[in-house]
Length: 345
Ligand code: UFG
Image (cartoon, rainbow, N blue to C red; front, top):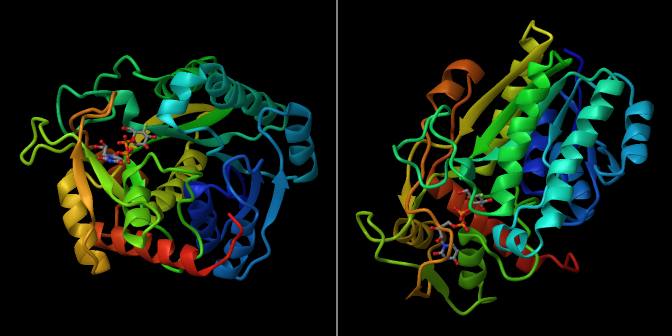
């Protein structure tokens, strides 16, 4: 297959790790990012990790003329991995139009531009949030999609529907939606990782910021859920494993011999861990003792979700290689790296 892959949101958390894995697999990634939730220094760090010059464009995926210019200039693009999106659940409740504009309209723009330039392979970032509070565990790709409980979750559902309808119209498109579980960790080089702006919403950056002293303590959101230890259960996957799934997915899409193709894959470890288990494992991985207290439940949190990943194993020929301890150690090393390095953020 031609090896040039456009990576929108390529300076972001999952996007940057995917750029590394694409290069390791012999692809030439070209980044598009508007740096609204990421930083240009990530590009230089990607060059340090890979030893390659990386092409990038500061472009917003909603800016159709600018996007077209990239496709015009970069000939022979074989596929697109579309990460660029907003992802804060709470913010999406306060600013729904911002989320629909950025996450949904950009997919439509991208599909139109891809059609114009005959680019037929697409990998789209979806989320296990589409399963809501599942009736059965582990969730399978054909488990019921529940009513979304936030505009953010809804953007993921709507985009999946857009891809399905578009492919049903016999469009020239081979698309794969990857439903991520909870991505955590960082690159083992400690040169790229998660960079939340302000107070983190997500568990692991909150834990590492507490351990390093930026926050005084973690609040565990609820200890009276119906789970063995009372805290919520999630499927935490190392971001490098998740990144590798994108490489497999773009290869799989390209391999399909039909004109129109759409499929969905769960990308997780298949294992659930509770918040208390994460704290215990973090203490072990970091050699520190985390300060935490118990607080009330957070609105919108599901009790537990973890995925069945046998479809990805079988069809994408992908599997996770890293453990929970690897993830937490790498997240901790990344936090320590940020502390030492002055990136001006
Ligand atoms: N948690 C705490 N304290 C915190 C932060 C989180 O106890 O300060 C708990 C949450 O209650 C939850 C678990 O840690 O049980 C994980 O929470 P995250 O916010 O890290 O992740 P979520 O599972 O809520 O959300 C993630 C992604 C979303 C995606 C969702 C799908 O961040 O983008 O999974 O379930 F939509």
